[in-house]
Image (cartoon, rainbow, N blue to C red; front, side, top):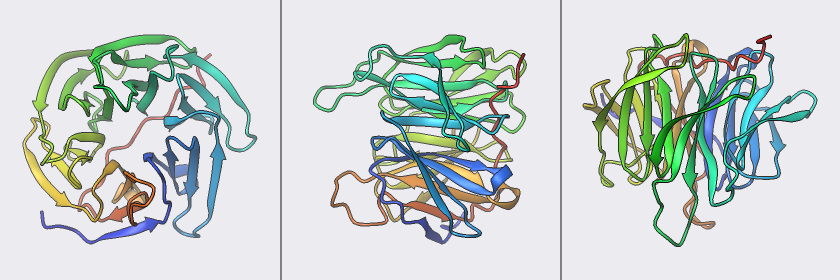
Length: 293
């Protein structure tokens, strides 16, 4: 595909913009600034903006059936009601925060919140001591994948039968067989090991054709991979560090992309949210099943 027109959707100036989530019920985009501990909301049709503050880094979040958000904060997962501000602890994932903290997460087709952790160090080499977890509405935590440095890139195929998961510091992209009824994963397959020049894999999303879109955070590219790991698009971006794509808008035919600023004085659009026409619709993302008895 030829390079699409890329525009700035939101002048957000985030330090680390992440976890864009399309809120279909309210026709708005939600996204986080991780170190600031802020969740932002933006309504494209009106330009309205809101934000909610947390006392620790917000790694990621997802939408719940109740209208609440399931939020990864520091080392915990909490339930948050944007309408009232009420929040309650659902589960503690990482008691060794801040050495390890929650990072990329997404609601799966099974209605659970899948949340990874990362070895959050600046001055030493990251160790493979992080993991990927599954958290259900009862607060039950299952450790699913071990030996990870920076868990990232969660996304599911349109039929919910394949799960993609990455390690940004691996770097690698894995595909798993996924059971939407039970949340069981099996048959791990390493489909790609992108280089720094191609773009180490950060956040990801799946399109309606089953392909996997990956933010090449080290190289300023948005990469599209086939389910078997063939790179079928390599889109140059006007920022050096994209962090996560998200399909939104009518019919999920618009692609939003969060970015980070590697230094406080990095010029825009680093830290802003970009938007483009991907030429394909996105796969729907699940809702957290907090209506369970």
